[in-house]
Length: 180
Image (cartoon, rainbow, N blue to C red; front, top):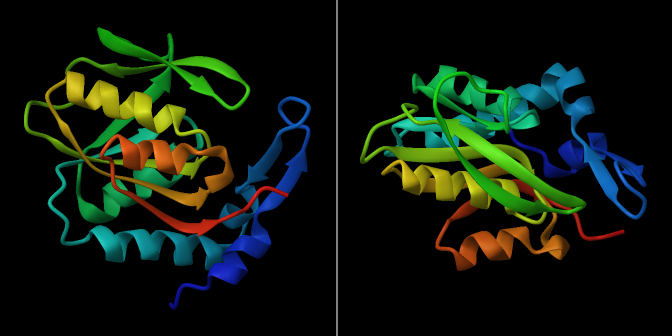
C-alpha cells in the first residue's frame, strides 16, 4: 500500500482548547479507526526500520504504545515502555521534563535493556519534544543509544523536532502540521 500523506492528515482531528485553553490537540484516534490508515502508517514505519540496526523499540505512554507495540511485533524486537511516574513496578529511573502545557515525569525500568542497546523511540507526535528528550536521557543513563525518534505527526512550530535534532537525535515523522 502506498503512503498517502494527505489522506493521513485528513483523518487527524483538531481539538481546540484541550487539554488546556490555547492548545490545539492533534487527535490521531481516527487513524486507528480506519484499517486502511492504520496499515498505511504501520507499514511505512516497518519499511523504514526493517533493516535498521536497532535492538529495542521504546514506546511513550500512552498513544506511543499503540504504534510501538505493533512495530516491535513486526520487527521482532523487545518493547521498552516509557511511562508516567508511578505506573511501572520494580525499580525505575525518572526524568522530569517540560510539556506544552506543564511539567511531567517519565520513568523506565532499570532493567529494560542492557548496555549498548540501540533504541528506536516511538510516539504519536512531536510537539515540544519533552517526552522524547526525557526518554533519550533515560536511554543514555541506562547505557543505550537512541537510533532515531519516530512519530506520526510533527508540530514544528512548537520546536520539539528542532530540539531533538539539536540534541543529536535524528527524527522521522510521516507528516507535519503548521500552527493554525
